[in-house]
Image 1 (cartoon, rainbow, N blue to C red):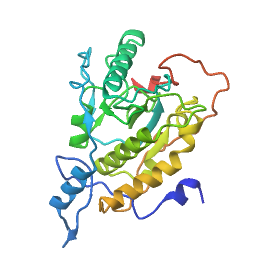
Image 2 (image 1 turned 45 degrees about the vertical axis):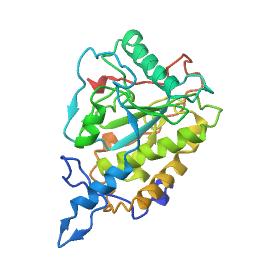
Image 3 (image 1 turned 180 degrees about the horizontal axis):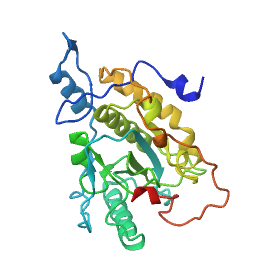
Length: 273
């Protein structure tokens, strides 16, 4: 039995088209084969954490609008920002981080906008990243980003402030990450045992750092517990309907990866075009 199989419980899912087209079956009681949408809506509303919009952190206008696809993502990719482990946990610092990431992605990388869909600061502040990310999540759609090379078409990325090669993420960040992943699993009908992965599971990189990566099994467990606490009743769904090319390949972590501010491994590849 793999570690992922060992993590599986009754909190799995089968996608259903309910609530603004979002694919989910959450919190709903099945009555004669019908889903109680009011209960499902209550569960989803209870799961959504406070997420600051691009307007809140004064984002630049993107060079072009991000592509939105009707099919939901099948993986949540955890990253670190490869920036300093700041002791400033204020909201103002979090907003400045989002602006700095956007500037780097647009001005240095030459991208149209911020690459990842969501950003979490060390103080636990959660922020919208790429344009229209919150709209896509609310509608159960996938907003294509630039964060995991050759897999942006089916993954949603969360950048977590800091560098976790040797440092442990702070409690506020991990709490916000748990809330964010539970919300996304509920909105998209994802099993946390399969869905929550690290950047290094797809690309040759140390991201999200050894310490944060080692916490992913606990993160999956905490997300399941949060879903139970929300009384989210999800129907079991495994990976049988996920294309083989979407599955992680677990490449070796490079011993001599480039170190630079904001760089944390391959973000865009030829299959992303």
